[in-house]
Image (cartoon, rainbow, N blue to C red; front, top):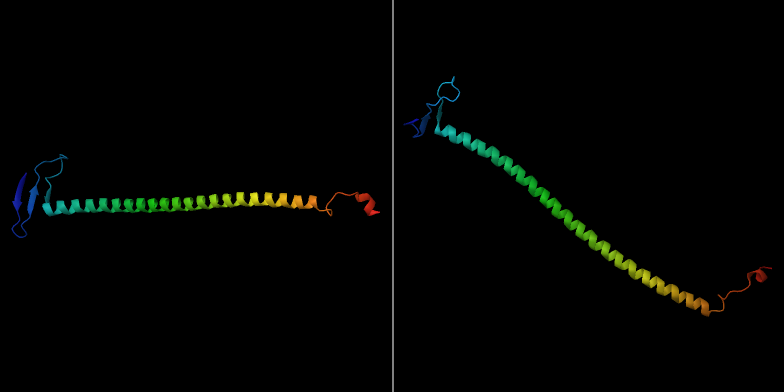
Length: 118
């Protein structure tokens, strides 16, 4: 391989003497073209990586948001269960209290209903 200096812009021109395909002539390509090609490949790769990274970030944020929502809902369910148990207990106490009042009152004593309907 030989290198020549282009006096206009100071870049090197690589002249490849190797013939990989067997039929094609030796390829001439400047260092700037190589760098441009490499930068385009890097930019394409960077764009793909950036899109992939943005998608991953979006999914992670969505998962975190759903986890927080699930935690909030779970806490709310626990609070409702606790309130439900408290209300059941209060209902039992009130039911027992009403039952005791009814048994102590003569108004609610069992009587012969057939004799009163006549």
